[in-house]
Image 1 (cartoon, rainbow over the protein chains, first blue to last red):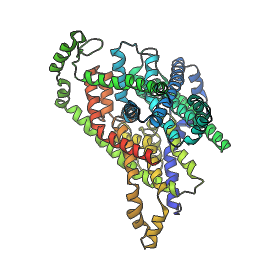
Image 2 (image 1 turned 120 degrees about the horizontal axis):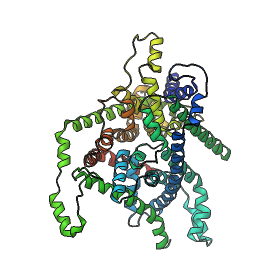
Image 3 (image 1 turned 45 degrees about the vertical axis):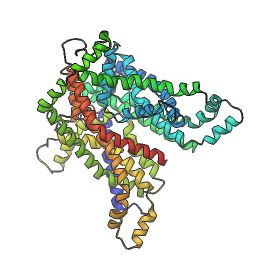
Amino acid sequence: MRRLGPWGRVMLALAFVFLYAPIVILVIFSFNDSRLVTVWAGFSLRWYRALATNDQLLRAATVSLGIALTSATFATLLGLLAALALTRLRRMPGSGLLAVMTYAPLVMPEVITGLSLLLLFVAIGLDRGLVTVTIAHITFTLCFATVVIQARLLTFDRALEDAALDLGATPLRAFLQVTLPLIAPAVAGAWMFAFTLSLDDLVLASFTSGPGASTLPMRIYSQARLGVSPEINAVSAVLIGIVAAGAIGFALANKRRA
Amino acid sequence: MSRRARLLILGPPLIWLVLFFLVPFLIIFRISLSEPVTAVPPYAPLFDLAGGLGGLAAAFAELDFETYRALLDDDLYLVAFLTSVRIAAGATAILAVVGYPLALAMTRAPTRWKPYLVLMVVLPFWTSFLIRVYAWIGILKEDGFLNAALIKLGLIRTPLPLLNNDFAVHVGIVYVYLPFMVLPLYAVLDRLDDDLLEAAADLGAPPWRAFLAVTLPLSLPGVAAGSLLVFIPAMGEVVIPELLGGTETLMFGKLIWNEFFANRDWPRASAVAIVLLAVLVIPIVAAHRMNARSLEVR
């Protein structure tokens, strides 16, 4: 077994500094008591207070949260069905088309998906707003959810399900009482993945959203284009904190189970 | 399983994706062949369904590729195409060179570290993409952290122009897509049989030779997978060139965005999107093949 030498250690350390330093700097300077974002002027929570009274940002955050909760749930349900179809119903007509369509959006540049969805909404006369952004996010995240659940189903031991069927369970009951509990962590993971992707999406939302339905990334983007501002640092720090807490919680939960 | 049950499983996702992925795709193709007009929506309808089948045939006879011809006439699109390829390929090459030793170091770390190392590489991917790009504005701008640090160290006197140029776009792509390159490489390198390297050593090969003759060739599928995973989205990137690039950094994704939001020329935006897709079809199919193969191996 080849061991990690001193060069390897330096390499790893540098890589992690590169990956994390920008995020750490961003968070530190959200506590800076100055409008200048590169000169430290003492610790302060003033940007967080400003955030708490920034109605526009708060409204955008609520919009984003609502869209992410709805779209992640629908995407996970549809993704579960798609994953089942792709692993169990391979010979059924239509499953080949489904395989292509669950894969293509993963690699399709978002500008193309966004533009084409917008053109569809205009063609069928659907007003742009919360509903259209949610539909766009379901379509986009459903493919990621499918991949996550499909990977789990491929390694799943079918014998357990067969045993339930032999013992007289209906296919539905065997699925609900045997298969679903066993793949539940993957389904939960798929939901979280879909939720994060939806919360983070800027491009699809920009194309498919209408007046009054600006999402948080859209607000952050329009301010970031004007340059660095401490308020944006504060929003970012809050979002990063949520992700960090989620990741630590997830790791702890997994550790306890293992 | 009954036929009804199977339909209930396959039906919903299939119908959803046909409606919201396949149909929009056909629409974008249709509109790219249509003429822009000042109206809502701003394009001339191409098919008049009232004319029935005869009308449809007439419409096909009249199809013209005016919008596409206009793309060829305007240098802007060729420049944007070349810029996109140059930047996406350049950043992919940098990522391969940076990501390879990193992935290799990860495989050689003590076994109990490995899950945490993988987690540390993946974790930034879970934080907002937009925020990670935004963070670099503060670092690269003229009075940003990097320039301040370099001046303090006495390496430079006047700040370097680091932001709003191609350099910054490369940095942004390398930063954001690093996990995409490292993870496939790590997966391939970690599965590599140590016995092969031992055999090479026993036969008298120095480590560098064993690397060139054994490790590198066997890990090429990982390099290819990682490169495709980076190159494809980088070609259509919008946010990174917009926030970190300069006015001359014209990339395809940004062009579609501009045609649509600034110029309100929907047919042209659609045509540019179709061209981008045509360019990406070969890498996308290659990536799909590789993905299918890796699923089978598992």
